[in-house]
Length: 111
Image (cartoon, rainbow, N blue to C red; front, side, top):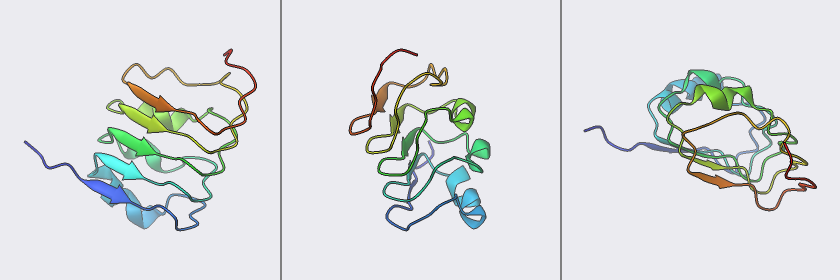
């Protein structure tokens, strides 16, 4: 059985996922990127081991994040405290069991 690896890159004013951290993320089950300045997930597509992803308190304006579909083991996704207005482009993610969208500016649940 492999060990649970947790990577915390929160509160670092990151605007893009640093290339030098991608290898660390590839070996992680839980990734915490809260309280940064992320607007997209470029670079995250090669990280399939993640089961928990905290993206709270960033600058996401949309749930149109195609990289999320490339995380087949993702069970928990936290997108609270962003600038998300609607759920129109929310990707199909059958593995998700826990989803937080609290403290966004969502005006409609249609999508």
